[in-house]
Length: 102
Image (cartoon, rainbow, N blue to C red; front, side):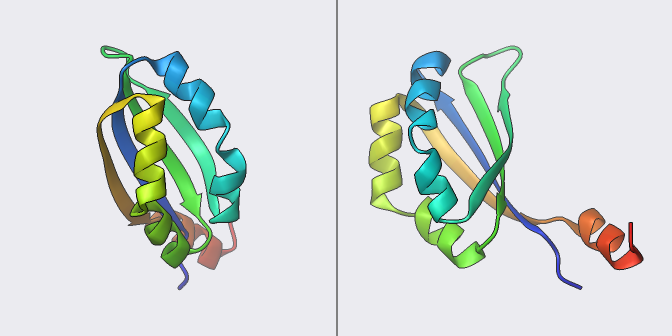
């Protein structure tokens, strides 16, 4: 059973709106490596906490991108002050639904 793969990224930024403006300029790069943004969350108690869930179309490329010095440099310029914490996840419930025809 093929399971859809996701990349979850958590980080802390100096200023959410400054970070978001720079983040948005990198859309084509994320698409190029097969990362499709599904959800972007901002903390309710601390608005400088950011969590992003991407669908990873190509796990190897997503792993390489997430470990790249280029990504770290861009994050630093965007005001990331902590992180990123990155997790790769399989969606068991989606795989079961697809196998069941739902």
